[in-house]
Length: 286
Image 1 (cartoon, rainbow, N blue to C red):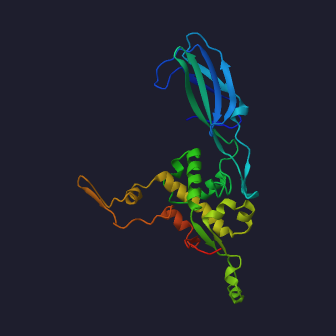
Image 2: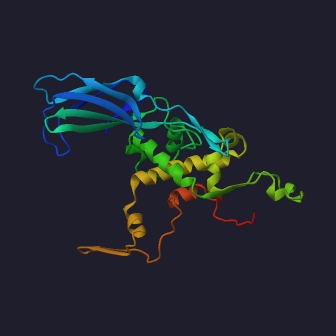
Image 3: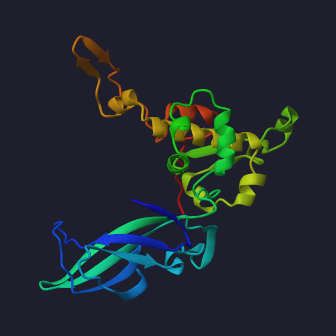
C-alpha cells in the first residue's frame, strides 16, 4: 500500500476492472473518497471518460488528505490524559463505473502519515525518533535495528511501547539512607504505575516526577524490545508454540519442556527495566 504525507494532493490510477478482475467498459464514471472509518471525506464527483481508455486518473485534493486534528479523551466530561494526536490515516477512493450490466464499484486505498512526527511522547513512545537513534547507538547487541528502514523501526517502537505499558512498575526515588529514620519514608515519592495509568500520563509528569534512571531504562527497553520484534527470534517462537524437540536430518534440537515465561515483552527488554517491574495485583473493596 502506498504512503503519502498528510495534507498533500494524491493522484491514483484505477483500472476498469470488476471484483473478479474482468475488464469493464464503462459509459459513465464517478468517484468518492472515504477515510479509515468509512466516513465520506469527499462527496461523489463525476469524471470525464476518454474513449478506449482502460484506466482513469483520480486526483484527491490536499484538503481531503488531511489527518484529523488532535482530540481530547473524556471521562465523565473531564479531560483524560494527553490530547490524542492522529499520526496515520487511510483514504479509499471508490470508483463507480456505469456499464450495460449496471454500476460496478472498484476501489483503491492508500495510507496518510504525519509530516512532522509519528512518535508521540506518552501516546505511543517514550522518546522521539531522533532520540531513539542515540539510544540505539549505545546498545551493543541489537540484531535487526540497523537493517530496518525508518518506518519499520517506528512501527516496531510503537508496538514495543504498547507491550511495555501492559505491565506495572514501581519507581523508587534515590534518597539519603538517613531518610529511613523518617516515618513513612518508604511511601514518600515512591510511585506504583499500574498499566491503566499510562493512558493518563502527562509529559510534564513524565519529565518531572520520575528519576532520569527510570526514563533511561524505559527508553532503552523500548529500543531493545523493538529490535526483538524486528528480529523475531526463531528459537523463542518455537518455545512459545510448545515445541520441545526438533530433528532435521542428523541435526536435532532439544528445548526445555517448561513453558517460557511470557510477560508480553522479551527477556532482553525485561533486563533493561530490572528493578522497576512490579507484578503485584491489589484488590480492594469500595
